[in-house]
Image 1: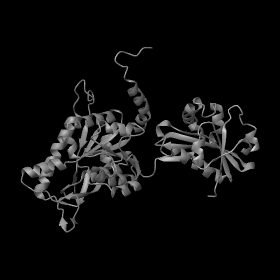
Image 2: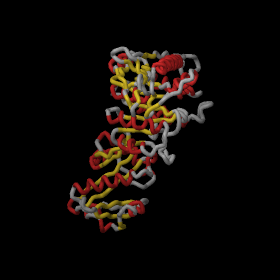
Image 3: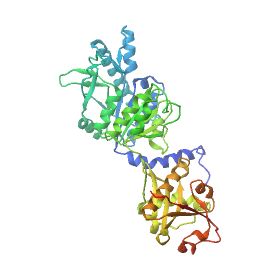
Length: 444
C-alpha cells in the first residue's frame, strides 16, 4: 500500500509512539514532581516545557510543579540597590529581601498559571482546560545560624501537606508549589526550590522527581554523559563535579531515592523535548537516579517466554542460534536467566546441566541490539557460571558457529565434539558443525 501523502517521513514517529506505549500505561495515575528554577521562566523556549507538562497531564500523570525565583529576586534586589548575601549557597533573607521574595513568587506563580491556562486552537494546549492549585502546602522553620551568620527569614521545610495536595490531584488539577513556607505562628520563610521539590516528592511518595537543569548538560567532570546512577554512585560523583545545576541537584535526587522515591531524573533544558525523551524512551537523554540498580539478573518465568522469543528471533534468523519453537521454550524457560532493565527484558541466557558429567551447556546467549556493548553479555555469562557452580558443575561448554572468539577472549578454549557429555554428543548436529568451546569453572 502506498504511503499517505505527506507521511513518508513519519515512520520514526510511529515507532517511537509504539515504543512509548508501555510507559504511557505505567505512568497513568502516578505522581511526578517536576522542579525548575526561576531561570527557566526567562528562556524563550519555556513554553515548550509547558506544552510537555500539558501532555503529561493529558496522559493521566498527576503533576506537582515546584518552581524557583532566584533570578527574579536578584533583579528586584539590584533595582532597589541591595546586595544579595549568601552563606553555603543559601540566601540571607532579611525583612526587605523577604518582601522581594514574596513579590517574585507571586509574579512567577501567576505567569506559570497563565501559561498553563492557554487553550488556543491549533496549539498543543488546545482543549487542555488545566486547573492549577497553589497555596500554603509547605510548613517551614527558620534555618537558624550558619557559619556564625543568622539566615533570618531563610527557612527549612518541616513538612508538606501531602493529603491536601493529593486531594487537588484527585480533582484532576496540577499543583504548583512555590519556594515559600509558613510557620504555625504565621511567619513566612524563604526556601530553596530543591529542598521544597525533594520534600514534596518524599512526602507524596512520588513515582518520580524530575529536576530541569537551567544551565549545562547531565555530564560528569570530564564531559561524558551520565545516564544511570544509584543513589550511592550519585553522591560519589558529586565531589568531582564543577559548580552548576548538576552538582546542585544530584544530592537531592539521591536523597529522594533513599527516602522512597522510585526514580529521580535530571534533564537539561538545553535539549528540546528532553523531559519527554527522558521519560518515554529506554535510553533517555538525562541522568536517572535510583535507590538501587534498576538492572537485575533473575531467573526467567513463564511470563517471560514472549520477550525471550523476541530477543532470540533475530539471532535465529541470522543462523547464529538454533530455532526454538515456542512450545519448547515454554518447557525450558526455567533454565533461562534474563537481564531486566527498567521492566524490560534486554538479555537472556540458558543453562542446560549434565550432572553425570559435572558439566553444563550455556546456550541462547542474546542481548538486545540497543543494549549491546555495555558488558551485559559478559554479565549474563557470569550469571550462568554462578548458577553452574551452585549446581555442583565444574565446567561449561558452548556450541557456536559465529562467536567463538568472543568466548575464547573470556576464558573458553577450543575443543571438539568428543569433549561433550555423552548425552549431548548424541545430539550434536554434524551438518551445522558448531565449534565446541569449554571452560573449567574455578571454585567460588
